[in-house]
Length: 470
Ligand code: GLN
Image (cartoon, rainbow, N blue to C red):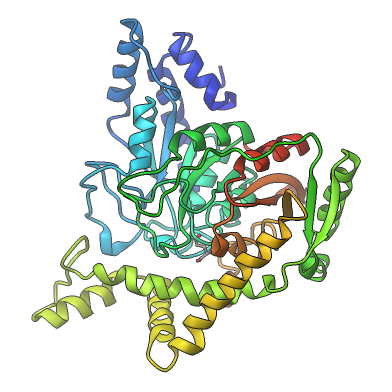
C-alpha cells in the first residue's frame, strides 16, 4: 500500500482498526525520508518514533481507545519546542539547544496520539522566503530541485509534497506557510491570529505569527487545525476559535480593486483570470471590493516586524539559549562577539532595520506610521468583508524561483506582497494549488473575516484544489 496516498484521517482510522500498524506507518515514511534526503527538507527524523509507534500499537491491541491522530507522523518546523529534542531555528547560534518542554500545539498533537516524527528545515529564525538562509543548507523544491521550496517553512512544505510525512507544522509571520505551500503545490493556512497557541514557538514577530498545518488536502488541513487550535492559558494572545462561520451554497467572492493592475502584470495573470471565470461558472458571484492601503502592506510589514524581531531577539545573547563566543573575554564581548558570530546575515539585517525604526527620532516617522497603516488596513478589510464572504488573490507573484536568483533582499521581500496583508490584520488566509506554469504550481490565496476559517475551507472545497505532490 502506498501510505503516502492516504489522508490523515484514513491513516488514523486504519491504525485504530488494526488494518495498518503505527510501526508500518512510521517505517514507510522514515524510508521515504532516506530516499529523498537530497531535497534537504528534513533535518532530523526523531530517534524514538518506533518506540512511540509500538506504544500506540500495544494500546490498540489491548483494546484501549486511541486519539484522532493515532499513528499519524507529524513533522515540526525547527522553531517549535518538543521536550528533550534539539530545536535550533536553523541557526548556528542555537546549534546545541535542547527543548526543555513541548509547545502547546505539540502536546495537543500527542494527546491525539500523533507521532512527532521529524524536524523540518527553515530560514534562520523564520526570516526569509526561500529556506536559503539555513545553517543546514537550502531545501530544494519538491517539483524541481533547481528551484527553492519557498520559506520560511520550506522544509515543511517540501516534506509534505514529497510524501515524507502526511502533515508538517509550519509557522507564518508574513507568508511562511502560504508561500512555500504555493511553491510546492500543497495546502497551507495562516489562521486568525491567536487560533493556535504560540507557547513553545520561537517567533520573530509575536504580533503576527501563527503556527498551522501544511497538508496535501484541504480536508486534512481543516482536520489537523481543529486539533491544534484553542485558547491556551500559557499564551495570553490565544483565542477560542471554533473555525466556523456561516457556510453557504454560493459565495460572494471579493477581488481587490487596488490589486488588479498589479495582478494583470504578473505571469499568473491568465491563470488567475481563468480561475475567476471558473468560480463564476460555479454560480458564485464576483464582487470588486476596495482596500485602499493594500499596496502599503509590504512596506508596513517590513517596518513593524523587524522592530519586533530586534526586541524579541535581544534575549539570544550568548548566555541563554545560544552558544557563547570562544573569543569573548569580558561581558560586553559575550554579547557582541556571540551575536556577531552566531546570527546569519538576514537576521542581522532585520535587527539593524528594527533598531533603526525604533530609535528616537525615527520612531514617529516609521514605527508609529507603520502602526497607523496597520489600523487602517484592519478597518478597510472589515469594510470589504461587509460586501463579500471571501477575498481571493494569487498567493505569490511568481512560481518557485531558481536557487540563488533572489540574492537582493528587496526582491525577496517583494515575494510577500499578497501574504502580508492577512498577517498584519490577523485575518485567516488559506493557500490551495489551483493551476500551473510549465509544471510549477500556483497557489490561490483565500482570505476571510476573523474566525471565518469554516467559510474559507468550505469555499476552498467547493472550488476544489489539486495537489501536485510527488
Ligand atoms: N518572507 C517573510 C519574511 O521574511 C515571511 C516570514 C515568515 O512568515 N516567517 O519575513
